[in-house]
Image 1 (cartoon, rainbow, N blue to C red):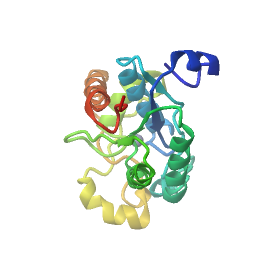
Image 2 (image 1 turned 30 degrees about the vertical axis):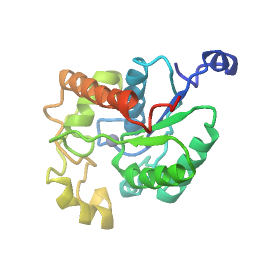
Image 3 (image 1 turned 60 degrees about the horizontal axis):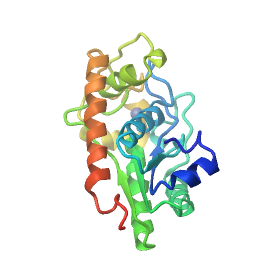
Length: 227
Ligand SMILES: [Zn+2]
């Protein structure tokens, strides 16, 4: 059930016990993917996992995150880490009617503020978890992984180009990236190689990611209501 397209009366009747909040970003994703790529991917995984549980609602995705490293490309808008942390804490406190909340994150830059927010909320006694997946052997940004996922979820938003950007492992790029931003290591904004992206791979990735979130909803004490 989607919270954003429901009325309060429908939500009251449904008495859903758990809420997924997708966390996204508005940031450059190379010359071929839209700026809302991370929000679309997080929401698609949340919707697919929620469809397997009749007690789970999905909130509208938060379209802004911590994207400072992508400044310097047109269109990138960022809340920054501190504001994102506060936003997550406030959102989850306001979701008091739900017994458990899972924050569904895709954009890597949101990981640290999300972890801090979850720590604070748990200390306040809130049943909350942050789900931030990684794809084994996947590239980091706007490359094969994200292009494949977008070809599976919203192909009409994917441009014709299949660009190659900086292909060194993220760990080796990170020092320069943190100090000078993505633009300093990749002129086209891609960290990876989109040439072999495909819709089939995107569907497989989406299924695997959905299964992972589904397992959290089935089994993690922090994501399952106590009663
Ligand atoms: Zn992304």
